[in-house]
Length: 229
Image (tube, rainbow, N blue to C red; front, top):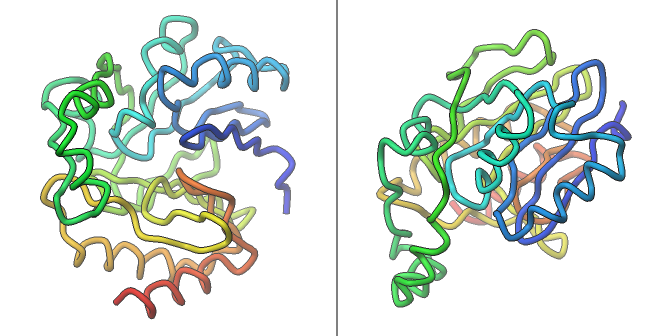
């Protein structure tokens, strides 16, 4: 298994730089982390113009925050799940965080912070993907993971038995957790997506928040389901 070609760039959120025949970025962090993102890319010999693709796991501002800036510096093909494209391209305003989550309750009491967090220039999506599709040039399979957002998307690398999963599962201090609920999406949808992840029999998962999950990632997600549902 080749894990050395994946560089985790971490701040308040993770982005992943994947080097190979095609060098691509999974998610783009928040604007305030732009210097850190570019510094990590530079340290690994990669500039914005070297990126063949940007793969977006979902539309939240902490994942698409530097999309426009990278697009201005290079010409990567931007890929995103169909349900999230209108939010990424600015056609639909992101909803407020759900009051069903503790974080959502706190954020709703600070509307100025929410507005600042959600303020993100729209970007351009070049390829819209849905469940079961493949990105042949990257050797990746699309697995839709709705629940956190309508178009939540994971990118599965079968050759290396791993996947980039966005915010469906977090991994802080070695403990897996559920995502912050957003808009009106239900725990039932999150549970269904978690069961889909558990059924993929993956060794490693690369989450949007926290450390890499694995080895035995799918088994760990299955345990999380048993605890939460």
